[in-house]
Length: 353
Image (cartoon, rainbow, N blue to C red):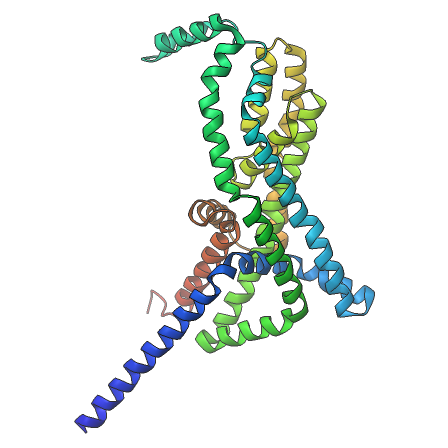
């Protein structure tokens, strides 16, 4: 009996070790494709209803897959390449961009600057020094920050080559997932059911809904706000409106909104003496800044029924923890955890018992 028990324990331990080695080896092999696969899965889940509608219109799955893959290339990859090229170009032209904004010099310091506790006198002296030196002194003072911003932009994009490879890989995987999405979904649901029955299936479905809701709510809202902000900046004559629009998009995705970019533009107009233009831009900016309070909840509610606080926390936490792809990973993790905990509590004994 003892030898049989020892044999069983040894077999179980060896089985776990072998399975662990296979899982680690598989993940290690797929490591170069994880980022592209994550993006492709996210895009496929978010646009799957559009694929089904297009399939109904065309009557052929292959034609619908080809059209949707081309649309993904045009709607996602091409703007990404343009954005990366814009950021890299702005990084390379950092001193020139600063010179455009500092062409009028710093001007006299505001009266309230000296009243700031502890730092007011030092800030006032520094401001007066830069103002006395003219635009050249201001450009010289800001150039080191331009270099740091350029390095951060290049590091964030990972370079044009790696971004191009990631984009191409993502498009290829999107096409494969469009063609084999039904099989992949059935396999995922079967695996989830094997783990925890109907609760696992509901968690997988909720994860897909969370991805679709975030794609609709966060990304579409950020894109809408940044485009409107860019148009407003261009109409009111702000230099480098395209670069500022890209920055506004990043802020909007990070749930900060375009307020910092638009506020800086309004202050710059006041600084250069264009008071009327500054007031006009401020008035136009108000609905753009407030748009996310209406558009984002409405779009997210169309995709998934979850507490808004949970979605926002997942977006911000995922962005900080996992980077841009964390926009979707964070809400999915919180949504699945929330659902499983809610199910576990509901199926347990009541407090009165």
